[in-house]
Image (cartoon, rainbow, N blue to C red):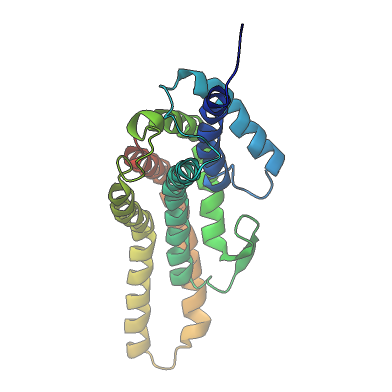
Length: 254
């Protein structure tokens, strides 16, 4: 006679519930997927679909009931891992936004801002522009597919285990953020450097001609030079963005 015990039910439910929380956490924090324009039903449906595809390929789950205290701790572990992977990719987007903010500050466009629907706040104009460029580059370079592949590979690096501190290397994820932000400063450096030279030239011009109205001359010159340098730097921004994505994906578990 075929019988199903409560332990069998717990094993079947846990085999899909534990991976689902890791996928759902990524869908709630990763770029593009966490955008407010993406409905929650789409995120949950994507997490369910990925769980159904990936769960049968995973090794045996720990004999832990998802309704027990140990099961709750294991669920929290999956949420933290999925959130950490999503935040690593968010670092790359925040880096480009930081580069745009620095460029806009030097150009004198820090007062010109747009509404960022993703973060529900005012962001500088240049930062918003570079964020859109980064989002398009992310999709063009198949970053969304690489992100899902990295999450599937994370079950090999961070397997499901009742020992919460045994596998995740949280220090690696935290230390890698420094390299991501340094790459963002490298993106902004050419434009910021040119604007610094313009500021020095205007300062010397003001010393030699005190009657010159610096605000009437300096702002248009700085704005034109900044836009010109940004236009000239655009062909070189795509390789920099690709290196930025490569650095972010190298931080992810493999």
